[in-house]
Length: 193
Ligand SMILES: Cc1cc2nc3c(=O)[nH]c(=O)nc-3n(C[C@H](O)[C@H](O)[C@H](O)COP(=O)(O)O)c2cc1C
Image (cartoon, rainbow, N blue to C red):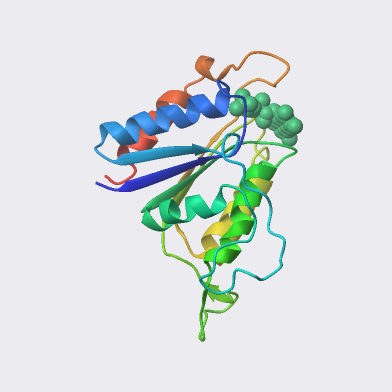
C-alpha cells in the first residue's frame, strides 16, 4: 500500500482533468492505495518569490496553502501532477506549485551533475488533458515534466497519461466520449503492480 498525493492544477471542477483524476484515483484506491487529491483551485499556491527566507528547512513566508501541503508531500510515496494543457504546457497553478519545491530543497554538498540541491525522493506521474490531439500536442508539457521533475528534482517517473481530444473549454467536457477514463483507471490500478 502506497501513499498517493494527486495535485490537481486547475481545470473546470467537473471538467476533463477532474474526471481523469477521479478515474486514476478510483483505480489506485481499488488497488488498495491511500489516495488524497488536492485541488489548487481550492488551495491556492502562489509562485516562488525567490526571497530565500526558506533556506534550509524553514517554512515559506508566503501565507497560502503551500506550508500545509509540505507534510503531505513528505509523506507521499507518489506525487501525481494533474493539469489541463494551457497554451501548450502545464497550467500556471502546477508551475507555481513546483516552484515552491525551492523551500523543501536540502543542502547537498556533493550534488550530482546538473543539480544544486537534494529533494525528497518520490515517485511521480503526469496526467493531462487537452483539446487537440496532434503528435506534438503535449511535447512542451511532457518535456518540462521530464526535465524539471524527473531529471532535476530527481523523482522516479511512473508514467504519463496524456489525454488529447477532450474538447475545448467553449463546450462541455468530452472526455467521457474517449477511452481516457478507462486508461486512467487502469493506470491508477496498476501503477505499483
Ligand atoms: C486558457 C486555456 C488554454 C488552452 N490551451 C490549449 C492548448 O494550448 N492546446 C490544447 O490542445 N488545448 C488547450 N486548451 C483546452 C484545454 O486544455 C482542454 O479543453 C482541457 O481538457 C480543459 O480541461 P478541463 O475540462 O479540466 O477544464 C486551453 C484551454 C484554456 C482555457
